[in-house]
Length: 103
Image (cartoon, rainbow, N blue to C red; front, side, top):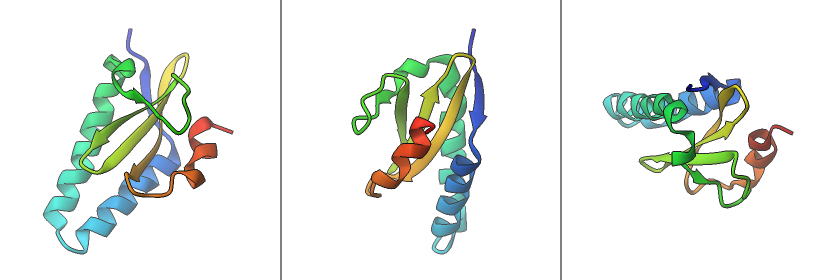
């Protein structure tokens, strides 16, 4: 049985921020990237272990999938999949660790 997909408020804000940034140059591409992020996230509950373990953390319950240059990071929990963050691959990962680990 697939777990429920839940978005943290911060992850929602991440996607909105990404779309707003891209939209300055291309509203069409902003919608396409945001849609692809959401579409990818919606497939995660079916096969949560498909994503790779986030190397900076090393916890098998914290994984990521890639959409273009963005890291879609989620935490596998008992009854749900929590979308914890969506960050650009070149962003400093440090500020996101506590949020992603849920501490």
